[in-house]
Length: 209
Image 1 (cartoon, rainbow, N blue to C red):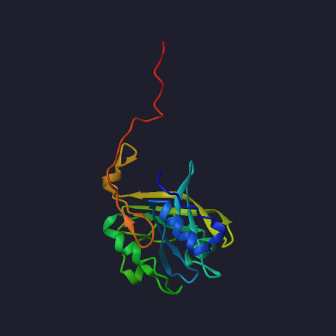
Image 2 (cartoon, helix red, strand yellow; image 1 turned 45 degrees about the vertical axis):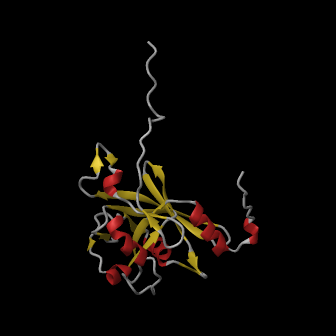
């Protein structure tokens, strides 16, 4: 039997626990988020603590941390404007996603810095990126704070989906064609490997009559 390493989280600071968790909770989908500052600067940042929390209405959650005592631009922008766009990036955009994680002053637009094309959104004021295969226009719904560092879990409602042609088949997304990227520990990313299809556990029971 292999030896087991025991770790007491009370013995580690936040940074070491972060490194541990981001290596254990893998792979993680990435929310690539555009938001607008009060002065009109278009911010762009990736968040891999990301999931959906409701299907009707559709709601998505991202966890936004702090740098020192200051919350990241994305959290400040969303709470102020109550609008943003979440994108799902594919593998050709991997470098751009990674580069958009670099911290810039609030008056610097990562979108402009990276030379990314934008399109006007239809139901929110925040522009969406042209390149990603999926963009979801969102309105802020709720914010919860967790832990000693008061990370903010921001929940928003999707008010409009934009999905690239060819990805939607009978109401379902063709995952292989979407080619999403995922985050693993450190500055490392992953693509889809083998996709295994199993029998659904939600099949309608057969009639006994």
